[in-house]
Amino acid sequence: MDDLTELLKGVLEGCVLHILSHGGSYGYEIVRSLNRAGFTSVAEGTVYPILLRLENKRLVEVARVKSESGPPRKVYRLNADGRAALEAFWRRWEFVSSRLAIMKEEDDV
Image (cartoon, rainbow, N blue to C red; front, side):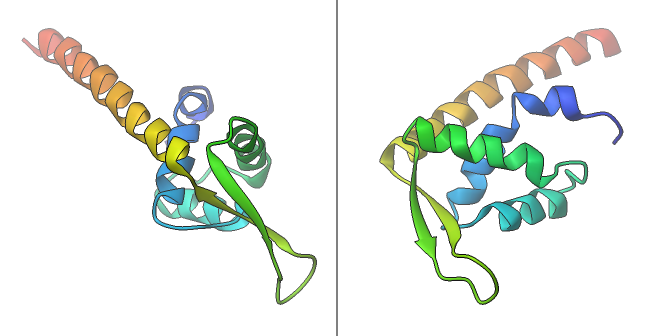
């Protein structure tokens, strides 16, 4: 889909939390996961500020891991607060998506 950038701004943090809920990952791999999920317009320049925000909110643990090529990578893992934030994201998402479905059904009648 074209031009999802504005709509995704409020959702990508939750998507990153979801990806991290499956285990530790680093920025480039998170971008690839988002791309594989169909968010092909998401680039590293979008994800790294999200990771910094999650780190500043203390929702993730960060470890530097030796890389096979280049400098060490920062690997991000959800902590307990991050898991709680992910649960809250899904609750908000369910609320919004259910209201949108109701609105669409009313228009289809």
